[in-house]
Length: 509
Figure 1 (cartoon, rainbow, N blue to C red):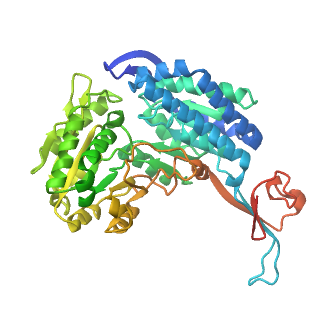
Figure 2 (figure 1 turned 135 degrees about the vertical axis):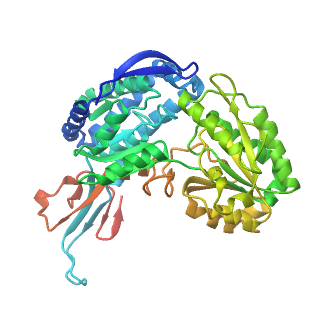
Figure 3 (figure 1 turned 45 degrees about the vertical axis):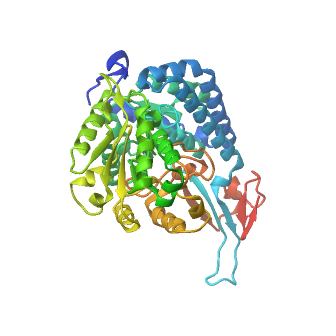
């Protein structure tokens, strides 16, 4: 593996700014993983790791100005967006610290012997333990919240798992800065630096997922890259869980009644959602099923006006810009596809938002228009105009898994009249989050959140956002007829740690 230099690049100009590091060699990946493996005992105490997570949040906030400046230089996302994202990242860390303190994530269950049961039940005590070292693959579009200190890292550390992060090439300088902050926070609690490893380079990412001491992986990125790593994780002599977020079209269904009731508002809302962050959100609505006819025409006009008023923006890197321009051109050349607002190059380094329209009938059967059913990363959406409900349903039946699916209903439909419930039932198999009369951009960090979905949205049934994301890095173990003196403190009858648990069928808090 060649040790090539790693440069920080300005997406506004495409020029290299400074050398940040070098790509990790196979030996360096091995050293990082072994150091993480050796740090596991330091995370065994829940009190220590909760305090570590809170200190990490405090120190990230203390370095806010430097971190936001570095992030903006490498991502062009702007100080306002990045300041908010850093706040979200700190909130995640503190939220997981609270989860660690509470202890319910351990799922403690105790059954005492019962000879009257069929078959007889022995003494059984079950809880969850950390998997081991977790490999985290950073995302390009969230340099804080889905990167070195992001949700995968926070949830893995909360579970008691050290982490080795494969830095994203779009923000290598920021990755180094954030890793240094987390290591300083670790040292405040006598946790070794190795608890948070950082490596750069494509080959390093492959070496990481293959390392025998890596026990699980979390990934956010493209279908192509994620599937390659997923396959590598499955092909190991000992396969490991690979929790990958790969790609999502995030379909939207607009009923005829909803369009008739508020076409202008829906069009404006759609424009705001699809252009937010220059269309670089994983939950951007990429396919919209809208009715043909007068109400649909009003909606398209509203969308046209709003998108036309949206400025061109900078994508995260020039490779993404080139792919966006090429993808738009390929889609726009398809028969019967029109461009009310033509997306594409906005300038030498920017892109302009836009949208395409197509008769929904073109998407009901396999053919060249299937390209419109693939995600195009950037400020583009496809509006498929359907003639009747069966045509819309035929398109939905052909869609792969998604992170989100949205329906815009009229007031009466939302109240239970008409096909509202049927449409929700139709969308539920397609996505991990189903929205009514809203827009999918914006993923709240909340206990009930689910950020995942059927393949290719994700490679597992888990969420990467919200408290239950911690479950990805744990495995259950049961002790049978173990003497009380030998049991972990979590499983003892007197509950010395004061944990929530299910004790002989009764839920204790």
